[in-house]
Length: 85
Figure (cartoon, rainbow, N blue to C red):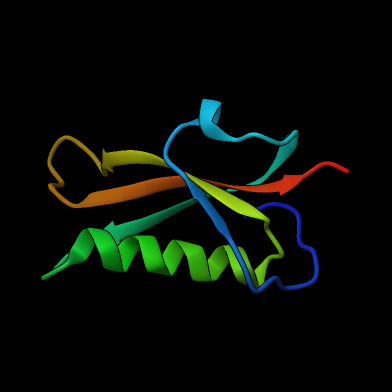
């Protein structure tokens, strides 16, 4: 994670950078292991919780990435964003 601000209650969730209608800066990059039943939703909720903790205004869910060629673990990647006034 990168910059920290006072915690926030509401996080706007986006699935593409072009969908963000406000000017923003990226304050951190996140990844969360996807595992188990409802793994994708659990990973997303965990990312949102982390974004609240660091004071982000929104999160851009970037998709999935595998840890390595021999590791089949899948990680959900995201960017925590802060709107610019």
